[in-house]
Image (cartoon, rainbow, N blue to C red; front, side, top):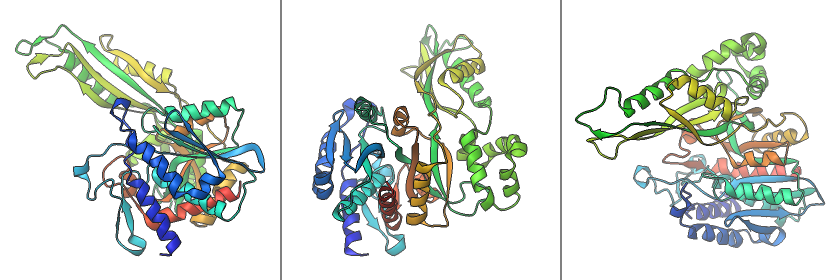
Length: 446
């Protein structure tokens, strides 16, 4: 590895070692690491901080502006500072040690945030630092938007959008974390695919509550609150949302069809005929395929009595619902109530946001992303639109831009993707270094 690349990896490791962990309850957050991270960025990327202006927004989020030759239709590159909590005992390597394991093509950095999302954040800064050092000036303004609480409330990104709105700034292209370069994600497609999110599912939490008088567990009623709640949960599980192929998913299949083996090529290329059958088959091909063709609902939290010999006066369940394009918080809530079919089970929306608008998968902004994929990551890679399965800070930017995309420029295996928000998160060094090239090429075309 060259000295330049080794230095970039060392900077990445240093930033991964700063535990910028966010919590839903912000009273639990240690804010000192966020300040340390901000200070480290200033020290590690001196040219960037000399050439760009930086504002601290909403207490901890960062907004950089790189003045270009024109202020119109700027490029916004997004990432987030925060990472999810860890259970250290589950990790093979300490989650905030950023240990480099292996050599050559197998060299891998193990750390929380290696992919989600400091991998992208640091790669962006490396690309900017290189271009500033080369004396390059962007044709259009460039903004770097780094939220501090993407994993929880997303308030930092919302505050940045409010600030840009106040200043009359309407980005021509916004790129946040999202899909990656993957293989085998679409059945029958042997070529690697750059999955670029043109929309993301909405997210909501519905709270199911059953109330009763309570009492001693030695004399339970015929149908206690916990049993009624369990029946409601079972009904939701046994009656999933209907399947359908939304427009971005149709575009995904149409894009990969020429690269698919038969019979997939014919199936993907004739969705007008095969679409209904395909939608019914995909849920059986894995969790990701299921999430592409339906709104999903799963119970994530349960609460009942305070003791093992006490009847619950209230039994509660949280249902996490991810809304497919075309569904809404209102329509999903109505369906949950119909499926539960029990007036004694209260259904309350704790919070929710509808699916994002769909950005076009044609036109100049899309071509810029696809060109950077080809030049930096490989000309054998097919760039394809899809629906982002998780929520990101980019959803707030749809209020000020019609071209909001979600793509992380790393070639990830199934096991690496599975480690996100889990133990043993990691990224191969070569993969991360190529990601820097993607951002450099995208910036150069802006």
